[in-house]
Image (tube, rainbow, N blue to C red; front, side, top):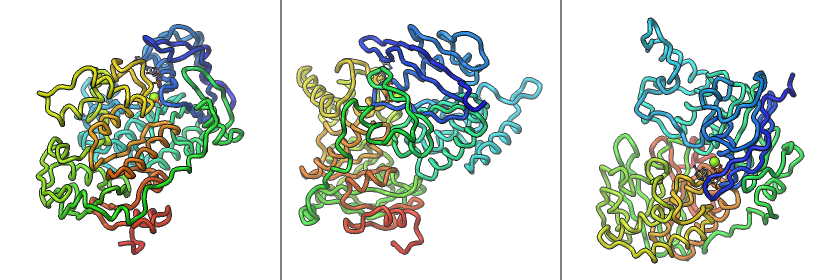
Length: 506
Ligand SMILES: Nc1ncnc2c1ncn2[C@@H]1O[C@H](COP(=O)(O)OP(=O)(O)OP(=O)(O)O)[C@@H](O)[C@H]1O
Ligand SMILES: [Mg+2]
């Protein structure tokens, strides 16, 4: 029966100290349906999912699953799994030092005479990955692979457990176009096999590409359930934000090219690191927003990291504002006026037990020196300013950052780097996981920073967003900088051609 309900959540409520995360929310999922769960950062999406999967308890409401009698109240994650619910969480939660194969079969390793059968496990893992068109060495430790691939492993694991309900909480935020296509292909395959899929994402295009239905949450309450076909995009955004929305396209880029032909802020010659990024030259002028484009794994983040000293380069000379600097670690770079928002925020950014204020102040404090601590009042003012500027949804500035929603944690890290008032700001996927409204705000902020004379390096998998913000782009392919696109050459087509290569763009 195609229309059979596989999952019904009724009147679910959940409060955290000071926050009503869910307020009598209903959610219905049917067989063979891909159902988007949408809402702004902090709307309650991840909480609804955690309640469903037994990670969080809830106060009231009912959850029923097809084929099981009765109500699942405050069940364990193991029970949820036994009921055929399989989940890929917003944060990849695999074990970095175990092999890919071990991660795929953790807790359900194939055994022979009570001992883990490594050979079978590795073969099965390899077959599974091949079936998803991912060709890698499954015996290598997970940490050797990019976040995007780690995300794919988590999905593969979920798929392999023959779920009835598959939950994907922002799985695509670290995937490139090709990987997203692979994922969608996979989702459609599962859909045709009758699996019900819950898809949480901030990418509207993706919703319209694969989803049959959309449920919108706002401030922990249900706004409504809609058929994708019958809900135009603008209306979806309006429902998420609870207000009408002036079009995204209204971002104006900064000054004209002449204004940017000023002072050189970054002059990199022959910087490289063996096995990571081939030696490259790069000039960035005051007020420029330079984009880095290329497929995932093409070396975008590696280039950024080599500039910033997060990965110490083994060749080349770097001048910042005309002065040669030796950057062998991030603190050197920070003191030279650089800031770097890393791609992997969970590992390199957030200090989850500290407050929002502490997290915001961290980089500025490090720059100033730990022996000259900021006064409490000054810290509070700075924190409040950035909570306001970035519209960080938090109960207060003293709230531990771990209790913020994923997107809001992200904003905290972005705020941390803005606070250091750098001359050169490197942003690696700054809007990943950020809702549409705030995304536009961040893009505007980048443009505004450039107008104020800051230089920015912008890395994003979304070409559209780069087009809105960048004045120039460097193209990377296979760990090498292969060319640049000037302002006049920046359009979707040229970028795609340059990324793919072979089009004579070098
Ligand atoms: N463990 C927690 N402790 C306290 N508050 C929490 C906790 N987890 C979530 N919250 C709060 O509940 C609300 C809903 O958060 P949730 O993570 O569900 O949002 P979301 O819709 O998934 O947002 P995002 O798009 O940013 O991922 C937020 O206000 C958040 O701060
Ligand atoms: Mg979330």
